[in-house]
Length: 154
Image (tube, rainbow, N blue to C red; front, side, top):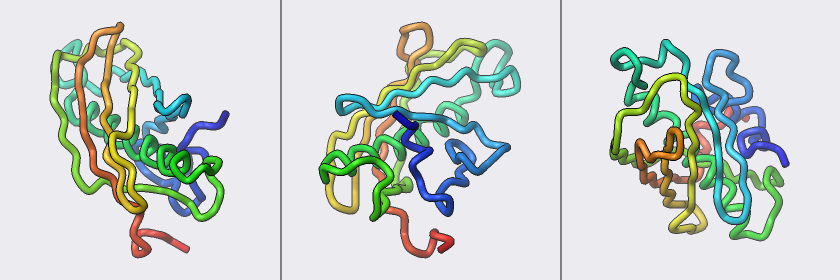
């Protein structure tokens, strides 16, 4: 199964955090299975806040991008459609709240798990947990809305 982000149309694949068309970004890949999205990401040494620990903004950006992917997959699932089929269900963040539960170590693969807790035609609410070595480090809740036409290139 392709990553959720790889099903986005090209004009919506430039995100710094998850865009398949952004060679300088993180290129986060989220996978949908049984009502949950899963992603894995290993922060690099330059993602540092203080020696040994990940910068909080990096954690927020991972939650943000994983939440948008989760919203997309949940919207398709709610409509009974396959990922990537037109009309495209690509979301952007309207609100993001992050709780940092524990310092996140550098060099450890992070696991992100996302679930939609509310799915409406133009809005999805997603909760994401970030874990390192099986221990929760951060939790986020995001309100996502369908990408406005003004943000589309075509």
